[in-house]
Amino acid sequence: MSTVNMVKYYFYKGKMPSSLKELEDMVALAYQTARDMKLYPRAILIRSRHHKTTSINGKTKKDPKGWHLTFCYKDAEQLKSNTHTACHGYTKDKHSWELLKSTHTGDKPDSAKRRYARKASVWPGPEELDEAPEIRYGHLL
Image 1 (cartoon, helix red, strand yellow):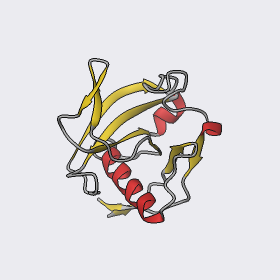
Image 2 (cartoon, rainbow, N blue to C red):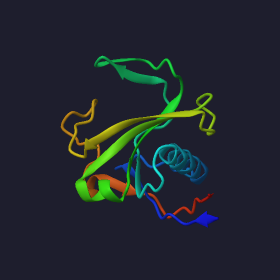
Image 3 (cartoon, one colour):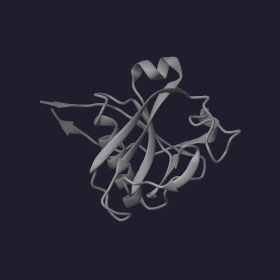
Image 4 (tube, rainbow, N blue to C red):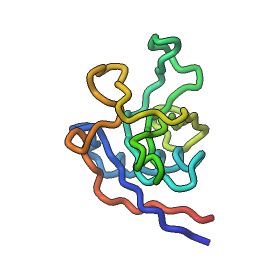
């Protein structure tokens, strides 16, 4: 059985990739990462490109799990409650787009502040986001 799940993809203002191939790869990895825990993400914020650092006890350090991209996603309930789940989609290296594993936080308020932009919310309002053009990405159940 197949299903259609329309998902909106966002980037922080001015951070959307200029390459269509990179955009498609990021969207595919973001969707796979969110689907790893949630059946139907409705919105995904792609927060980073490949990197291998994370915050450990409030300090930036090399992530022991390796290269990943950082995302936030919302299901239907989180859209209503202005909350999201942050997650990492881990890959083999900085050139790979295959999801090896993922990590997910619990619900966080959209108003939570970003680590490196303390005045900015993790999931800001639409005026601070760029919406990716519609990309169809599906899966079989």
